[in-house]
Image 1 (spheres, helix red, strand yellow):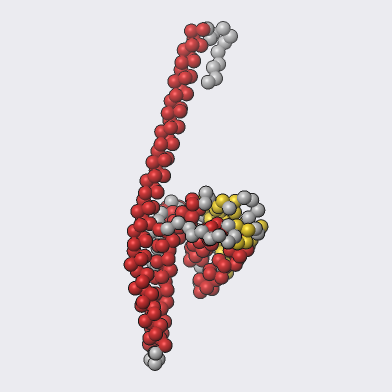
Image 2: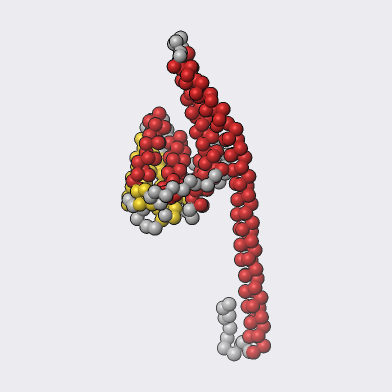
Length: 266
């Protein structure tokens, strides 16, 4: 408390009153901080309970779907081998493609419903980047998108961190590829120079509209007809598990674009 007064104005009585007021103000400030912390913890708990319920539902749905899909795919593949043409081969190929797409959706549901899988073998960041590039390349090629991968500082990370990074980069990379028009570019960068691994995924798409910036973090929210809306939710879950954080910047140029940057302890 700063008091501005002429010399001699503050006698013992006034000083005592100000001391009492200062104490009351300090108590009020502390109570406000405690209330803010209580509200924050309650929101965190509610969010965790909501995610747990969604995860349980996702695991149940995924389990019920995955086995029939495997049976359907096996039968269709046998039918393809015995096909005699007449357009039947193309129809069966489309069925296999749709089954594979549903399998990827189910895999996302399972990823959302369970914690990251831990592996004992450490891996260089360069190996993680290479595996992610191979997995994203078919989607990038079919969408007419150029994808680049850069490792600014390579080093070993634990198997658990490598798995989490791979899952984070694949989900962010797929989102970026799907948001980028043909002829566009998606750039992915990894930096292991510090104790925490930094990563960024940048695209040349139209960017995220202001009214959707909050919603994109919500599980099952998607603007795509065939999307699950779980990609970013899985990313945030993995980052939280490893003490990480995420930052979304959009647009990044006058023409649009989105940059998602994150850090993970490892």
